[in-house]
Image: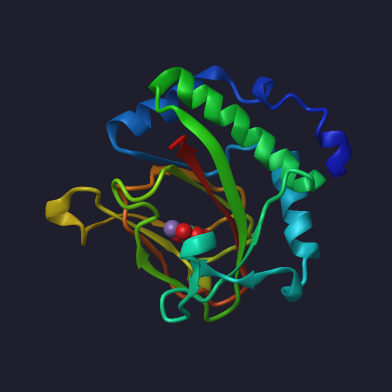
Length: 216
Ligand code: OGA
Ligand code: MN
């Protein structure tokens, strides 16, 4: 299916309401949730075809922070990223889906999620992203992190796991989830609660990382 005819799909009718209830309940209870697959298969497939068609020169070396705060630090991360743009038909499908997710979550949790930004990330063999937190309390308006993985046939030996550490201050070194970046897997977690890292990938690894912000 092409990007253009997918835009006609009303994503709100595809995912049943109870799934959004599950997301909201999980966020309220433990601060994160993980689905082996959540987005409609055609959307995942379209995004996968798109990342597969990109070449290395389409991406930029990933930095820490955005705009004024942006700086490169290859000892912390050495993936490459490409921001999604509304004007791009494929990006738009994902961004629309996230707009819908935002309103479903806002209706249930009153988080006041406002805008959303996301980038494709490509980790070449050998790439990693050291332990970090996406938002520091009071220092950022990032509230929720989303991750979608686009790696068919990803196996244990391919590495590249996402380690999610405990949100409690007494046990932040405890790994609460070890996530293989398998095709279609989707995560949401509270951005200021969960330190996480990407272990060294042993082959090309693709993800879309995104953040819902509050208006500040
Ligand atoms: C990030 C991040 C994890 C991943 O970009 O902040 O933590 O699995 N990405 O791509
Ligand atoms: Mn992160």
